[in-house]
Structures are given as C-alpha cells and as structure tokens.
Image (cartoon, rainbow over all chains, first blue to last red; front, side, top):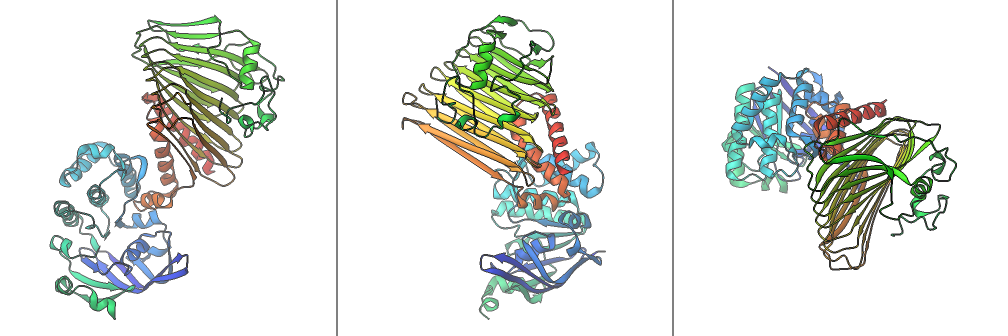
Length: 250
Length: 363
C-alpha cells in the first residue's frame, strides 16, 4: 500500500507580467488502488498540479509538500520521481525526432527496473500492450510522437502506463482530442493497467465522459488554483448537469 | 559563380577577407592555401578488398572536368596533372558498397591529391570514402554521374585530432541521373569540405546530407553550392550539426543558385545545429539566388538551438536520467541522417563515435 500526499501545495510560473501564483494551496491524499478525478474549468490549474508533481522546470514550488510514502518528492529530480513510482500521461506528449518508440520504451523500462528487461520477454510485453490498445505493430519503429495523431499519442501514453507499472498515475486530460472509439480503447487500457498493478490514479479532466469507463472513487472540483468541493461519483453527475458555473462565478 | 563561393581573384591567396574564406582560421590550414605547405609525395587513396566486375581503379594523367576558383584546389591542380580515377562502367550495378580508404599519412607534409569518380550511363553504385588517421591533405574530388546513373557517395571524416583536411567534392550530374551524398565529419583539427553540384541536363537530382559534431577546439566547415543552370532539376540539402566544448566551431554555407534557364527547379535546403555547451559557435548561412520565377519550389531553413527542455522533461519523466536523455536526443538528432547511409556496421560505428564525442563533451 502506497500513499501520495499533497499538502498546501502552492505553485507559480514566470510570465511576462511577472510571477503568477497558479496553485493556491492544494491538499490531496491518494492511496494505492484509488481513483481520484480532478474536474474543473479550463485555466483552473489542473494541469499545473500534474506537471508540478512530475517536476516540470517551468513551475516554481512556493509552498507546501508532496510526499510518496513519506519521501519528499519535491526534492527529487524528474527521473527520480519516475523511479519513485510516479507516472504522468501528458495531454500534449512531446516529439522526440530520431528516437524510435521501441528504443524509447526499452530505455525507460531499463531505467525504471534497474536492469535491461530480457529481450524475449520484453518483446512479448510490448506486443501484448500494443495489441490490447489496437496499435499497428509498425508503430514501434516510428519516432516518439512524431507525426502521431491525437489518438495515437494517447494510446502511446497509456501503453507506457501498462509497461512501466508506476505506483501512481497522473492522467492529464487523457480524454482530450479522442473520438468515441479511441476514448473507449484508451480507457480500457487504463482500467486494465490498474487491475494489473493496483496503482492509484489521479485523473484530470474537464468532461465527465471518460468517467463512464474509468469509475472514480472520489471526485474533486478544482477552481482558481484549489480544490473547492469534494465528494463521491455523484458529484460528477451533478457537474454533468450544472457545469462549473457556480464555482467560477463566486 | 555565386558570391558566397567566390575567392574574388583568380590565383589569389586568401587573406580571410573574402566571402569564401571569412570563417576559416587560415593559420590552422597548415599552409595548404598559401603555398607554404611542404608537399608530400604520397597517394593515400586505396580500394579496400577486391574490385568488382566493371570497376577500374587507376592512377595516371587526369584532366579537370570543371573549373574552380577555390585557392586550395587550384594549388592542387597546379602541383600535379596526375590522379586516381575510379570508373564504374556503363550499366554496371554494384550489389555491395565499394570502400575506399587511406593507406598513407603524414603531418609534417601535405598530400595534394586529385581523384575522379566516373559513374557510366545507367550504372548504380554506393561508394564509401573512409578517412581516418592523422594527416594533412588537400583534395580535389571530381564526380561525374552520367545519364541515368545513380551514385551514393558516403564520405566519412573519422580523422584523428591532428588532421588538416581541405577538399572539394564536385559532382557533375547529367540527364535523369541522381547523386546522393552523405558527409559525416566527426574528427580532425580542421576540416573544410565543399560539396558542390552542377546540373548539366534536365531530370538530374541531388540529395546532399551530412552530420558534423565538433568538440573543443575543432573547426569543421561544410560549404555547399548547387548550381541549377538547366530546367527541371531537383536538389535537397539537409545538414545537422552538434557542438560541444570551448571554441568548437562549425560553419555551414548552403548556397543554391537558380539561373534564368533553370525553369521547373525544385530545391530545399536545411541546416540544424544543436549547441550542447557554452563556448561553442555555429555559423549557418543559407543563401538562395533566384533568376527565374518559373520554378516548382525553393526554400531554406536554418536553426541553431540548445536542448529542448520539453524533450528532456518527457524522457526524464519516464525515469531516464539527464545524461541518458541527452544522449538519446543527440543520437535521435543525428539518426535521421546516419540511417540514410544504409550500411549497418558503418552506422553502428558512427553512432559509437558520436557517443564517444558526447561522453568527452560531458566531462
């Protein structure tokens, strides 16, 4: 059983107008096997939360703590956070020209497992992950995210989730840009990975449609840089009906 | 002759003020340009293995195919009327790449070499020029690609640290012929290569690509000139460079000239440079001169930048440490061109050398 604990997290970014505070004190605790949905309007700071936990250099932590089983996540480099068990499925995965998916995945798996996976077993693992996400085998030879469609990028992110087996997965708007079929395939991948690894999930989304496939245990409404309401799955239904208006206007 | 290539005066000794020489550290040329080099009596180029059917490799009198105003090449020509000729007979298709390498070296004197590569009508060949070891050499390489022929010329500069190398690789490309050149420069103290192309009949095309990686103190210059003087020829240029360490300096000049007669020209050139540390300098000058608007396309792009933070973040967020992430990015950056070579053991060897250079740069 692992615990990811976020306490009083404050984060700012440097802009042309000076430093702007985006997160204004976020408290959240996630345990293995739990799925937490973070829902909120655009610009509320949801993605900032995701990238700050992963350690993106653009964000400056100005207060609060993030710990994973008591270890100080904020003191770790980006790769150390991944090694500690954090995984961020990105909304806009980055192109890495000239680096094949196959080479990238094996390098990542080697780094996270501490040794190179045995070639034969590894080939099988990759093949089955690709098949279950309905990806063409030729995909492995393409360059990371280069020329990928929106759906391909998201499948590639979730394939990594399945292969890299983190303790906690942060899914940043994994549903954005997906058509109905791709949404189902990707969501099934998330559910399958969780069933296999029992990791905790922090699911960041603007819409409720992905929650039909990935059932949250907890729903948190995010607005203006902090969590403003918390509840169970029923809260998502309320948002579906009424939107975010009441949280934004106040 | 386009202005970027000109020496301004015939038989003139460069002073550094000429456009064609303004980036080159003349003091480090070992006297190749001003007549002070001691000229060695050596002919270093040799064939590796046995010659296939239809191929001859001979040494003897040689007549220049084209004129040049390059000061060093003119000194080479003034010095000797003899040189090496590699001839691929018409209609010969080489199943395997043909490797040439250096068998004689010297840094107390300079070799002035002339080489001609002739690829006959409808012949097809891949030729690899392997340059390694330490030497001083000025080299006039002329390449004739006859109608319908296809030549891939791979020129590898895996020189040792003391080498001074100035060369012109001039290709004359005839009707419906293709010339593909891959220039890889990873070693040497000073390397200056002029890959130049003359299209002499419609339907000709060239694809000039290259990679270079300069570390502390190295100077690598690649100066293209593609002369579109006939209609319906196509050219592509794509060079990628990385630099690391104090006073690492690279120069890329991409000069494309579309003359009035060259209707239907299709050309694009690209140069990308990756600065891995402070203290290095990459000069990149694309230049298009266009005398006719009746063309298919003409464009160029040049970028010089540092590591992309987003790429590093993405890789590191998957547990890959910073040094390995940088190595992946650099390998990927070069891989686009190295993979064009299509000869596995050569590609592996070059990637290993790139890893070594990167490791050196990281220290």
